[in-house]
Length: 211
Image (cartoon, rainbow, N blue to C red):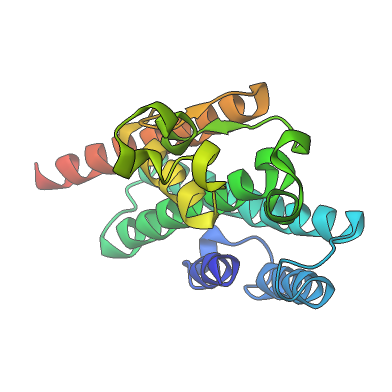
């Protein structure tokens, strides 16, 4: 569902922000999404290496096309007199898409992916990419302790990774969840940087239009 929302947001961007025919990239992304869903419709059965790689490739493709749109948008806002509600709305669409897609990327990579997190014993999981608060709550008050990873077997889902992405894009830095691996740090740093640049340029353009 999150991937479909991201694709839809991209598909309705202004045409000048989309490379080639408007529907070419969204159609390709939808085809990849269908392939991923067919390969593992409930995200809980055995997952092949092919389906995992296809899912990650789809997420990276959506991210890359969205970043292309962001680059074109920032150039239009900085180097030309273009502006107005359509481009500001496009900036919001791109920002929201980035939040969704980085959340998907975090979700796909963390501890081997969603299926691995559900099916693999905790002591055999890949190293965690993120340290959530639930991973540290086993020594706190009882009502909080019961929901900790150590006691309840809690594992992060997409909403948890989406929240990490949202707070990272809003605060331009980690908040209550820390990146542990180099790839997590690079991804969070890159997301925060793009969000910061977008915010600065859009705010500057908005202030300039009032003068």
